[in-house]
Length: 109
Image (cartoon, one colour):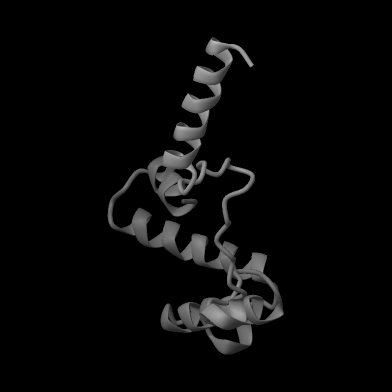
């Protein structure tokens, strides 16, 4: 071994001895990812499915009953119930003095 090679080996050995206990920073692929909790664990119910649909349909039924729609005239489908609510909103806005086009735009929001 030559003189310069000995210096290089010695400097490398001292550097390894000093920094040997430190770890390199993990890359993005190596880092731990946060686990996603299932809805049953968190208590959050998804916004789709049969339970949510029946809940939303029941909410629309209650809203229509509040607006004095007879239970006999209650629409069966969700789309018809929404249309009925929009029609009630349009009638109310139009009766308060709003223009028909503006009332229609507001009711369809």
